[in-house]
Length: 87
Image (cartoon, rainbow, N blue to C red; front, side, top):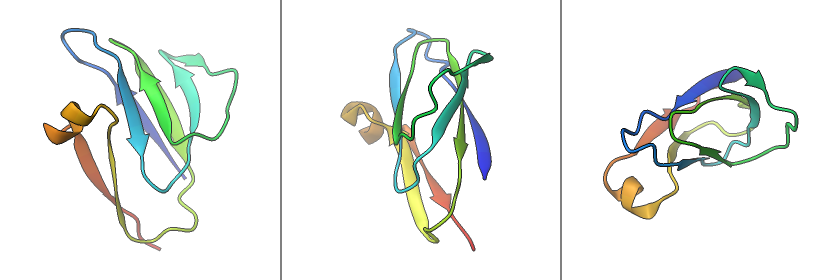
């Protein structure tokens, strides 16, 4: 189980949909305020100048996967990263 903090520092304050492959997560808080609905998601919109904390239980998948901005142009420009999940 890990908590990740997603911080949108886009100088234009553009919203970015953050997408995590394979592992669903719950949004725990936005800008330090508890999230009232903790549904399982694979994508969360991180608004301009917003900080979102997500909780990810890494349970069933052991391998490499990726996370990225779900705006295709942003993904193509490198707004993505790798996650290596170990047992």
